[in-house]
Image (spheres, rainbow, N blue to C red):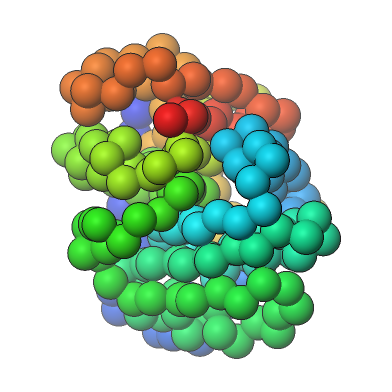
Length: 228
């Protein structure tokens, strides 16, 4: 079990999932992110990428309900940094879900569409959270190439680590927190679909990415980072 990456669809990716249910699911996924300390690796990356700069632009690909962008927005405001924050997601229900959440911080622009259509827009940083494991191998390689070409300061993939402890512990946490049944189901599937550290090297090589860092973060996050 878990020796090989699972190739399977998740319930939240069903195009027929109604908007209200989808919104409930992505809002609960935001709660998962808070409980599992998911924002810290991305914010730490931004500190490294931006350095002493007081202004930056960022694209978040596959933003869900926008929780990572909102957290980045508050971080930028707290630190007196001007931030142009843009999220793009293929699913129009994500934009609806993100706009339903009240937000205080730097303004955020939510877009529905393909990230590839934003090539040439000149972003300093490109990030994603819990998106890589949803992609096929070819899609992920194309995404890596896009980020490598388009991110002036660097890019960051924040994803899960395929690990048996996470796989067996997650249902207990999800049940305790009473998260949506789809979140409970898809959590295990997501872990089984994600990568292990050694599996990233061939992906990066095929995408012609050099000097990227693959790091583990507590609890059971696996992140890939490239500073330009």
